[in-house]
Image 1 (cartoon, rainbow, N blue to C red):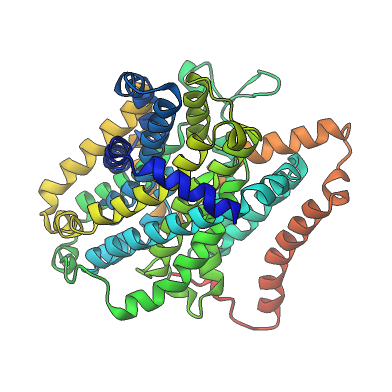
Image 2 (cartoon, rainbow, N blue to C red):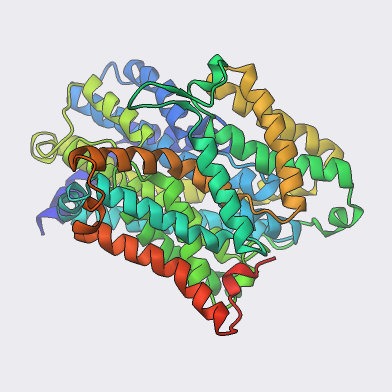
Length: 508
């Protein structure tokens, strides 16, 4: 098959010694970038872009572009893996797509299963990378055609489906989950309106014109919220529970996570293909999906290994999927792929339909390097699981200053703004009180992620239809998503009326 022949040629490029060095440097820096909250893959790739120019200066133009892309892509998917480490050990999401991992990963760590959670995250990331590579090779062309069919109406309906599905992330009460979703959507409206340029809910505070930084709120709610809980409640029992225990996953762990890893990888890849959807959305959707499929959804949020395996696989697969619209259409699907596109243009390489025919060395070399990089990540991180897992045994009076330092440094590094630090503390206090009163945090975070996308796509769709709302029903894909969203809300209500217990709203 021609695709396999091209891939073999790509491996010849990726296995050159200097490209192996670049891939290793990329995944190593990427892991560090993921562990530190606030830096994230986007900032990491942007910071390294100028460095690649000097590192590849002695190479021919085509080889220099391939080597630079291999290093930058390594940072991208390395960061996707690294973000899980602090999510699991410290309840501090390293970057936005790792927010979902905190829900079960941190609970597993508190139960003495930190090693198993970290190992499954590493294995899931590797499998997802493998799935993304195979899918990239065979599906690049047909999927790029499908992605082109997604207009603003389809995106709007898909995001709406995501919000309706958010009840699956709820706590004891679906009402509380919906309240938190609306709160997330309201927070997402703060800032300059991208269409009209009008300032909304900014109260003449210049720092609010850009809106609230997503990671600031996520780190505040999850990490600082946990810090306040430890300080104010000083629960002695948790100190006894937190032991590292077994490092490698048991056969039962592997059996329980095999399905979620496979489903998360596939779902993550397909969501990654959609421009604008990204790894954060993929990790949320895969978590909701696994919870829906589970025979015992009440385990989620209490340390279910599927709650780590699925989102970790999804966010890594999404980073592979995001390469398709970038390479085949020249459309960056996320902020990080936009920077990667800038790197391609910097080397006079135009991404798009002609990339595979004009620059096969770069395109296929990059795809092959993603497989090699994922093998490196597995080899690099599995031995370190024991080292990482020891962090959880650190006494809380040492650990709390560390969490605060990582959170403050990470949040400040995003925009170099003291205002963000004030927001961080406010979110930390809010996170503590909301959790104490059984208000789930995940729906708020998802509302914050989806809010701007829903608004922008709705307005774009209405602009094309001259304000006619029927556009959302006349487009078949859009109508299908809306029907699913309505059913998602109606079915639990009907089941409740019949006297059946609705498990999705009974999670502790």
